[in-house]
Length: 230
Image 1 (cartoon, helix red, strand yellow):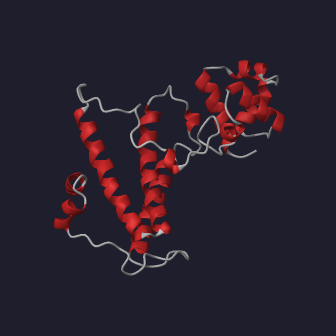
Image 2 (cartoon, helix red, strand yellow):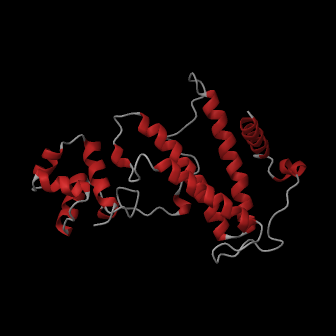
Image 3 (tube, one colour):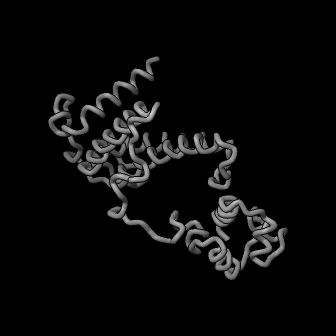
């Protein structure tokens, strides 16, 4: 069985607030055997995978870690909403001004970054930049998530002691590789950005090229360097 399965069946059970004893009884196996499945000590058969999927109301693909959608959907890029209605700015609530401001700085700056990546037309470069951003976001979300001891630890498969170093190490490697690719150098067989493809931007031209996002980007750069200099 793949490595994701033990973590996911444990997470689903804890999300439901079901004891291991109860889940085992409902699934018609012993508690000891379910414990072995959840710890990854033993592999289960396909019948159990199907039964567990029915029991928790999820797809087999989700149980096996092949999709993050419990129904088993593989989401295409064009299906991702630009504005999630479940996460709306609530500016009138106390303490909401700073998160709203910083969110806009980051989101708007990423608009510029990914537009530049599009102009570079280099898939390896886009992958490296994306990985660096994904890893940093992963660390920050996990830190906040894990601060509440009631949140199930089975949400994550990387050990607590290792995830920060591993994720930031991966982000740093991707950032370094992105720099090489952007400069036109090959990295591990991947070709760098072709000469003349890298867009030129003078600071004074930012506002003209990105009238909606330039101010956010400039503020983000200023904030970042101010923090680094303290």
